[in-house]
Amino acid sequence: MKNVIRIANPAAVMSGVLDLFCAQPFGSRSLLQRIFSLTLNDSIKDFQKSINSLASKVDDTVLSQKLKSFVDADESVKNEIREEAESEDMDILVTILRSDLLSPELNTEQVGKVFNGWVAWNNAVDNVDAEMQQGAQWFANMKQLLKLYTRQRDKAMMLSIVEEPTTLQLFRDLFTIFYEPLVRVYKSANVYSSITDFAVFADDAISVIESAQRQDASADPNQTVQAFIDLCARHEDNFYKFIHEVHIHDNGLFQSLMTWIEGILEFLRKGPKAGEGGRLDMNALFQGAVGVGQVDKDAALLEINALIKWQEDRKRWHLNKTRQKMAAEGTGAESIPGSATFKGSDFGLDEVCLHFLYLIY
Image (cartoon, rainbow, N blue to C red; front, side, top):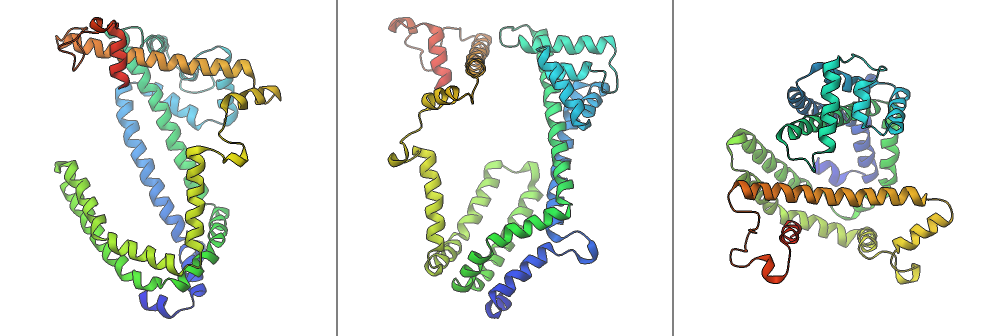
């Protein structure tokens, strides 16, 4: 490959690489499609392992099957169930499980278990009863199971999209957009000289990965991470040498790319420049959107206040869990880590405030 790249026409080589990945001999799948399919199939299998683990915790095949039926149902059925949940102000999970549009049907005991779990879920923040916590945890497992089923279906849909011939043509068109800049770099940067460096890196990476796989769970995670850090360090000089070659022979392409990326980062950090209106004023944007009718003020404030309340409830829940843990360990509710000598009352502070400050810190 190194010798071919060295003497061949850059445009011909780039075209050959494109054909290598996108060609469909005798109508079979292309190499690019096979790569995406392999990756997506592995992801689907990983989701299935997580689904099996959660399904065992739920311990009810009928409920799991009903969630799967909702995920695989037509969009019209899903929308009808979502509208029903919204109109009755009920959790979508409860609406799914009690719906007659999906099979299998639930018996009275299962329906009661679902509603009890929903009640426990809604009162998990303020209620510390062990039975209620168990019901909330069961309902949380059900919600997570629904998410996993949905994500697995999304991966399956992506897999079917990759198999479409129009998707392959889209990849070709996207590659063509970057074709001319790549040929420019190819011509001027002596890319062929980096082929050997990349081959050495690939061999080294394979050996490190195989070593990590052999050790599996018995290895120290820190040592595994350090092995990959050392791998990158061993080939860092060759990588920077390649970047240097591209940079000095790119006729401004590399510099333009870096300027473009830096402009995006600068915008994210500081917002628009002074000549473009200065920093974004979210209050002014909100008032302007309300003024032209793009935003419903009441609905927006309702959602914002709900988010604020959720954050407050979450912090209160963490505070209660911390106080229970400290009480169980016999340290007392008034003791804060690092405050063995002083108390909050010595400074005119309530102990609850100190707990909040400790959690935030």
